[in-house]
Image (cartoon, rainbow, N blue to C red):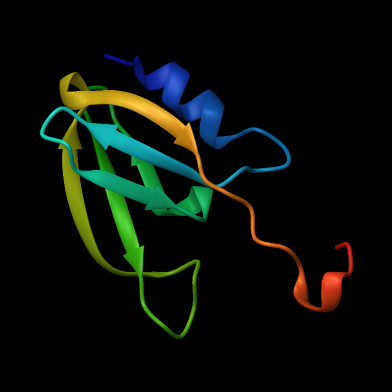
Length: 85
């Protein structure tokens, strides 16, 4: 189990690195924007963005912290045309 502070610290890293939150049931939640995860004392509220704006959620789910078993880095996609951002 991860503490709220550990999860929040990972979400606040600069620059933010896309991550996957893995829970005990085997579900995986890809996080591409840190503002879409609300960290509570006992659970996480994870937002899933709509197609119009990747920083605004369209729907949410709640996950109990006791079920979070891993936080994994997601592969970072290359910028368009191979240019650095």
